[in-house]
Image 1 (spheres, rainbow, N blue to C red):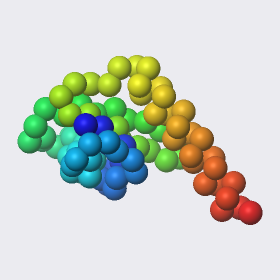
Image 2 (cartoon, rainbow, N blue to C red):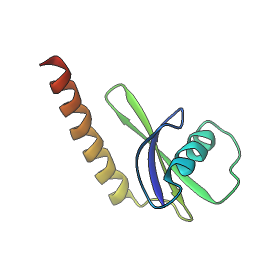
Image 3 (cartoon, rainbow, N blue to C red):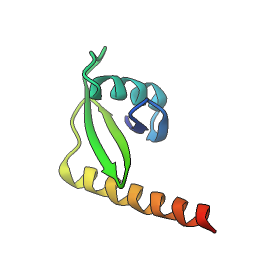
Image 4 (cartoon, one colour):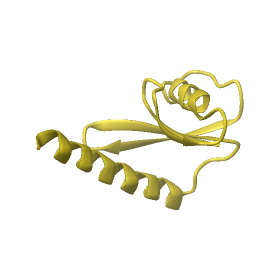
Length: 85
């Protein structure tokens, strides 16, 4: 299971049942809190936005983290372009 969320635990994207819960727990772990299960977190910054990528069971490898960063960069730049139109 994989979740991309905000530092506050809001789910941005995810896969698998329970992605929202993984995003919430991932945000808690990223902030220094305890996890109820084995969860790995990776912090991703895109411009001024900060995201937490959470994975149940095993950490993300560097290629997956880089791919998520590219997707977020494209999404964020598209959103900014649409908002200014």
